[in-house]
Image (cartoon, rainbow, N blue to C red; front, side):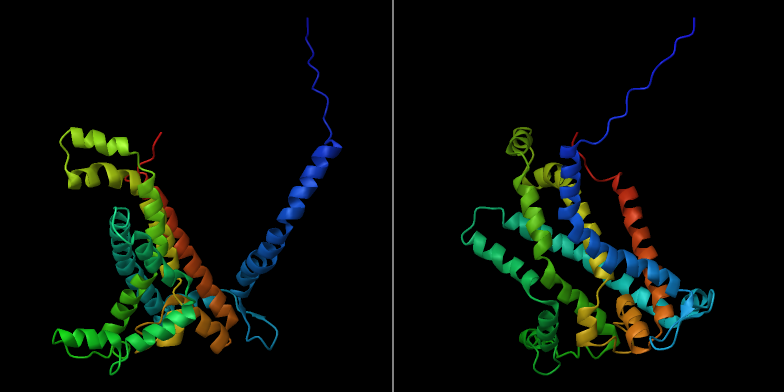
Length: 304
């Protein structure tokens, strides 16, 4: 005997559910409109421009893959990628080590602890333009504070921003000014580690260093991973300091990728080639980010 099953009756959205749905989209509409107009649409339009030649004045002209081929043959494009990678892969590990060390120190019971925390965090709220102007003065070859301090130890003044071999190290040194955000995240993570784990390790005979190595650092690996991903993305997008302090010099030593994209688009008025460079840069950053998430499965500790 055949048995027929009847599908359940379709439930229409009630008036209350419809009202909640509309209210939700109404409150989210500023973000949706802003994202659509200022992020999604420019990204989609830049794909179209990557196959065009456009100088912002005449109508765009289709050139096929010319812009794609050019970016692989352009020595300045390759140099800008090298400068960004050099800056990122040297600066970010040192930033993480310094910020984590400061977080360890500022979670101890010391006098004026809150004052020190505020002092190390305060550079984050300073506008990048103001920071760049200040650091340009710090690196001044004749009147800079850095050369003055080095002179106390018998080191001759250096033209930090005027010599190609010193320009990138100067920018790396300047990046340590902005570690306050990473430090605060590490402080929050250290405060959430159960004290019972350190007490159990102490009862097993573990000293301070072994507790740090086998308890604290494994539990902090999710935050280390988060700070690393954000720091790499931010470092690759360095623009304002190079634009204000050196404009890519000396001898293109600080010509970072974003600065070169800006130069092609808004100085040379070659928006098609700038769009192709931007998408190449986007793919590289996305590739590094995906690779970090894949590798993180081997060293990031996730508590069940």
